[in-house]
Figure (cartoon, rainbow, N blue to C red):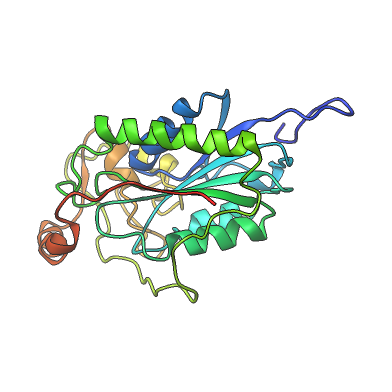
Length: 267
């Protein structure tokens, strides 16, 4: 059961790792932070469309590391919807925005607004880099060993601030309101000749864009180009258009090149 089950008068802290990570990069970042934080944790997978997220109710003593990827400088709409169903009840949230070496733009602003509306207290923020989920040459291999060390340092500083009681007001996080426009990307994965119609991708798609009875197809209206189906396909039978991938890579080369630094935001 998602609700806390405590005896009357008990005030126990629970740690939750709440993550939207279709291809695994955001989960790697979240996992490094959570492991370094040093508390026993419960994992909540925001990509799982079978979960009743409204059943999760937290309490003021809880710490929630909420990690999302930045899609065009925004929080994925489906993640916003599922986070909005949670009952924060004053739980402290550490906002982790993960991006593929371009920019996180208004991701923090949107994530902060979403969580505050759901009843969370936004206590800290982390911007971290992970390998680009579509054009894998950008930030390849990240988070790497150095990123792990930095995230461990961030976790120690956040925990120290939480235990000292210095984070209730929350940090000033970057971002604009209204948020930047994001219309998605034109790259929609398709199944190739190696597809055996096992249906594994259909079950793992966060938005149900792949029909279970015909998993070689993709509904372009539902697809959010998260690349989950490509990442999980056991036959490696799914891909996006090479022409579009090449064009997109050329367009992002300047913005996504170079080494971007992880950032910590505390009050």
